[in-house]
Image 1 (cartoon, rainbow, N blue to C red):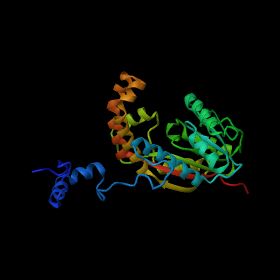
Image 2 (image 1 turned 90 degrees about the horizontal axis):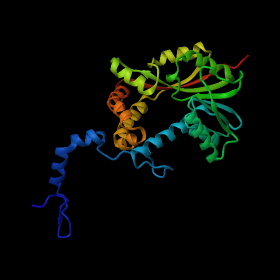
Image 3 (image 1 turned 30 degrees about the vertical axis):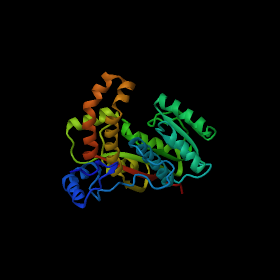
Image 4 (image 1 turned 90 degrees about the vertical axis):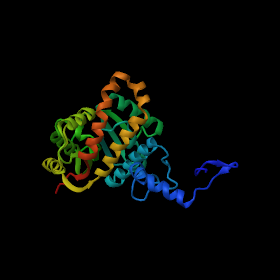
Length: 294
């Protein structure tokens, strides 16, 4: 008897309905555990004709980053000629996209010299160095005069800060009256154990997360009005899962880049981090406004 898929007379034996039924009877739980159990179908990770279709996990991660930036551009709504401050600008790509899409003039600040060098190189490559600049800057002590910017954003930054209250006040100070501030914040869900929380704060170099209510209160204390808040926790959870998968998939590359001793310290922390993100980490996006005078 030839099993389904075996070669027979130069071709393949077609599976019978009974073969298909037996396959799904046996492996439906496996498909559900590895591909999702909504329909046991291929998911639409990218829409047909998208500029950067996702065909690997790494492609999918980049596509998600690009979609996030596009959403931030739509939400903040800066226009041509306005001045935007990107607090904790990373390697500069979001700032560059803001300038390209909106025509705004963007200043990015960061405490990482490596990030700043990469950001400056990216701006030169994109041909926007006349409208996008990067400099060293501390969110808790901004080196700009009062009312310097029309808008500001801080994406995944405030969790690193030892004095969030001061950072909110500093951001309000450098914004003109009526200026908008878009910021994301990691929050706590449930009650993680000390090992999980410690793994997160060490790996992310961050403070323990608080609650959305605490973030809104601290922003209000700095004089901000709340315009909109969105719960994007599902994106945070999926990003945590994807990071865990990519860490395992690219483990050899990571060892080559950082060395076996460093990776030996990371290896036991990664599963704990993944569990913490899945079960206990929330993620919110806040659109705030500095009240207009008069």
